[in-house]
Length: 212
Image (cartoon, rainbow, N blue to C red; front, top):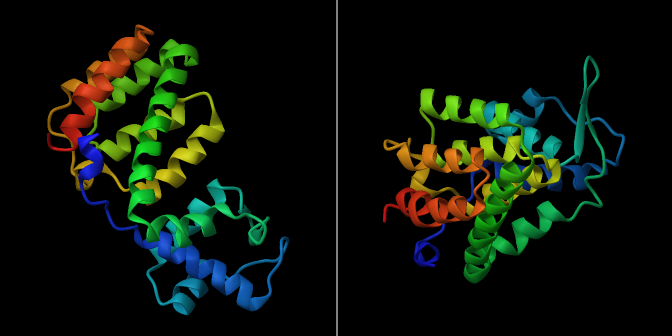
């Protein structure tokens, strides 16, 4: 694919913070069930903004590595034994070919999400998706985050979020000016026409989002 020849976007700030959090947890000898410092304390200790810390914690919670208990704080679930974040951080980002493979993997996951929406999502969910897209300014990343969220497979959504964090997003996060192709993609989902969905995604949406 021509898309894979383009330089990969640099990892987001919160991904680096996830690595720092892992190191901090190891240095402090924290184990599953232990409470981690507050958002403010983490911001001061890691010397990063609170918004970035919040995003990192949200990513870890989506992966099931930490849990927030109302009125108590945030606790480790299984950070030490979970290898996905470490593997992505130490291996994927150091190998140019693997980064390209990761971008291709993101495409595969997005197509699977679309396939699941076309085969299993309720009509109303797809209608709401189109209404959102038609009335909202969105980036390519926001569009597929929404698609991942309404696909019936919750694990697929989590995997997309992790892979997207490392693969970067097309069009450098710019808002989509021409929505026609994205709306056409949603229409193909509503009609349950996966063949058309594949064509619109590959030949229109991805070419548009990559500036081709």
